[in-house]
Length: 143
Image 1: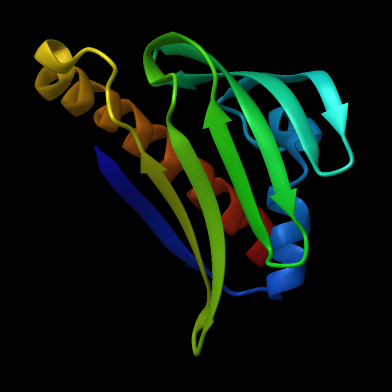
Image 2: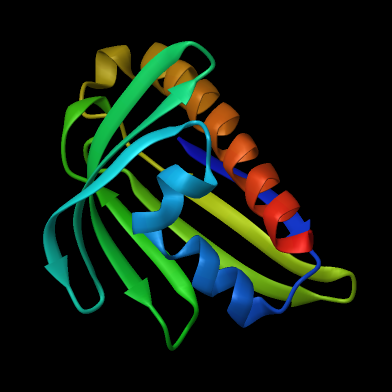
């Protein structure tokens, strides 16, 4: 399974990266996020427990977070639950009309017989949350 969700934000690339990579502030900036809790901190990220709403459905997961300040990328590797092994990368590409912020999710579901159904369901939740996350960041950064 591979999904990409993107949006163009009219703000400086470094500012967009600074705001979107500050996970500790996500619950105050993103109304659909219930919490982001660091269980381990490193200079470049750490292990985070995260939870949000996908509509009325509560979701939660644990990720290893790596923030690459040199390349301006944010990486997550899901460590538990249904999305264990999923790799998520946020990229920030300058374009004429602004900065394209893209969230890419890649997952090879661990139980092959269930993969066709599970990946379809998981990608639906991912897309809904990613679209809302990007739209909210866009509104905040362009305000």
